[in-house]
Image (cartoon, rainbow, N blue to C red; front, side, top):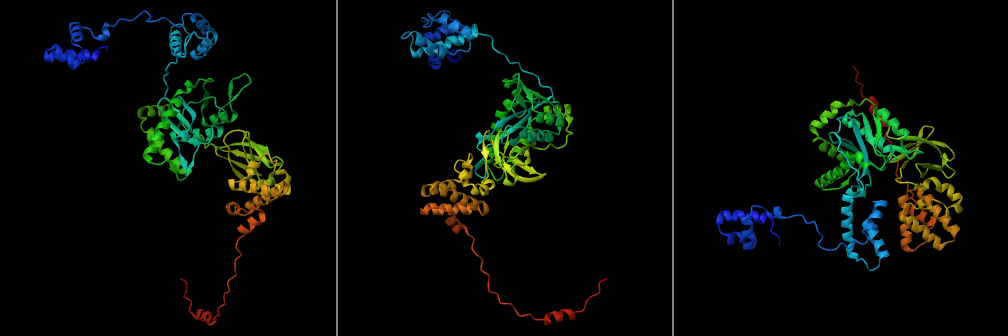
Length: 495
C-alpha cells in the first residue's frame, strides 16, 4: 500500500517525541524500513512521484484510432457508445463489451487536447436597477394541496439580478395573462420599476416570425409600455442569458420546501390562504437583501402606472353547437348565445364570456392545447330533442359528469336498444340539470347497486321532493277589547 503524506507527517511528529524509529513507524502505520527511508529524506511521498509518460499496456484501439479520429473530425458530437457499436459491427471479435469505458476515456482526452473549441461563459457585472428577469417554474413537485386536492401550478417568478430580490405569483399556465397578473404585482410590491424587463422566448411574451426569429406579442408590448419598461429577451436556446432567474428558480423551490417543513403541513384551506402564506415567505426571504436592494431602489424610478387588468380580451362567434374556441381549446356556453358574437376576457385561471356588456358565464380555463370543456347543462335540452346526435357527439365524454353517470349509461345501453338508451340517459341528464346533480347521482348509485335499470322515471321517483303537508291550525278567537284598551291609553306630548 502506498504511503501517504499524512502518514509521513505523523511519522516525523512521533519520531520527534519518542526518538524510536520502530515505535514511530508502528504508530504511523508503515514498515520500519519505509519509515527509515522517509526520515532520511526531506520530501513527502507526493513530492517523490514522477509523471508516467509511458503506457502500461497496449492501446486496444490503436488499430482503428485513425478511423475514430476521422469520424470525430466530421462529427465532433459523436458519442463513444455510437463509435464502439460501429466498431463491433465492422470487426466482430476484435473488441469486448468491457472496453467501452476505455474508449470513453480516450475520447474525453482527445476532446480536451485536440477537439473543437468549447463555448465559454463569462460572468457579468449587474447594474443596479437595470433589469428585472422573469421566468416560470412549476411547483407541482412540492405536493401543495388545497383542501386535499393537488394544486398543480407554476410560479411566475421575477428577480432583480443585482440584489436577488424576488417575487412570485401562482399561475396555472405560462401565458400572457399570467404575466399580466404577476409582473405588475411584483412592481407594486417593490414600488419601483427597472429600465428593462427580460424574459426567455416563451409564447407568453414572444411569437415566431417568418425568418425563424422571435418577435414580441402585441399584448406583451402594450403591458411593458403601460408599466414603463422596455421589453428584452434572450437569444433562442441561450438559457444562460437568463441565468439569475433560472438559478433562482431552484433556490426558491428549496426555500419554499423548507418553509413547508416548518409549517408541518402542505395543505391549505383556500387558494387565498396559500397566496397569503407565499407572500409572507417572499417577504421573509427578501429581508436578507439589505444594502444591495437599497442601491437598486435608489437607481429605479417610482411605479406610476395604474393597475393593469389581469386579462386579455378577444371577440369570437359562438358556433352552431354553442361552443367557442379560445387559445386552441373549446368551451361550451349557454345555447341562447348560439351564432352570436361574444366578448371573452381571458384570465390566467378562468374565462368570462360577455354579451351586450353583461357577464353571461364564467368558465374554468383549461391547461394545455386542443382540449375541451362542455357543460352538459348548455347542450342537453337541445340534444334531448335530437337524441340521435348523442352517440357520435365529438365531446360525448364531457356529458358524463361523474363515473356514476357513465356506468348508468352503460347499464342502459346493455338493457335497451341504442335509441332508447340514448333517450333515457339524456332524460336523466336533463333531470340533473334541472334539479340537483348530487341527488341524481345518488339515485343512480342506488339503482346500479340494486341491479335495476336506471331509467329516468325511476331516478325521478327517487329524487322527487316530498310534498309538504299543510298543518291543521285552529284560528284563535280575537279579543277586540284589547284594541280598545290601547286606544284609551294617554298619548305623551312630544317635545
